Length: 174
Image 1 (cartoon, one colour):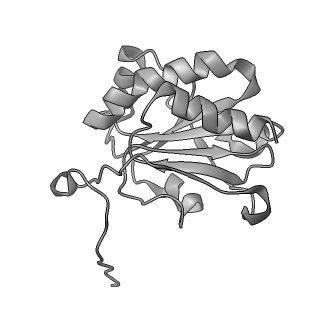
Image 2: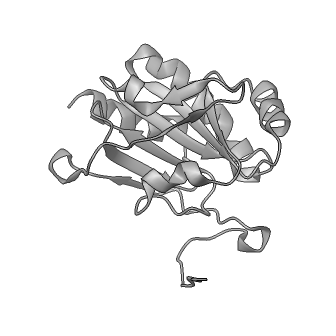
């Protein structure tokens, strides 16, 4: 068995099994972006979701957990960004840590989340984001460009609706 340990500058509630990041956006210029993110899974209703199907426009991917206080604070900003960006950008959530899909569905109903989420209780859906997202940092958000490559990320709560809209608009304008 391999156990990795280390220090982090991330803040938050590590004693609860997750870490809340600083919420500072990190942008990646087009020439420095890696390969497209390959991710498929099933949504909260058991329907298939594949990021490949969303290529051709930017995609905002948000990682959340129904019991995460920063996720609950952030969700209205995500909903507002979704409304403001309209069909120029696709949104997909990744629900991790919820041991039942019912808990995730309850969150989606309660916060009126307008987009689909991949259900990944074990967090394996985060593997394609290795090197960008800390697997224990909830919430986290990534903006993919129209080719599916990571263009920006925020480990921790997105500070404001406008922060996310600005990150997405930069990618739209490329």
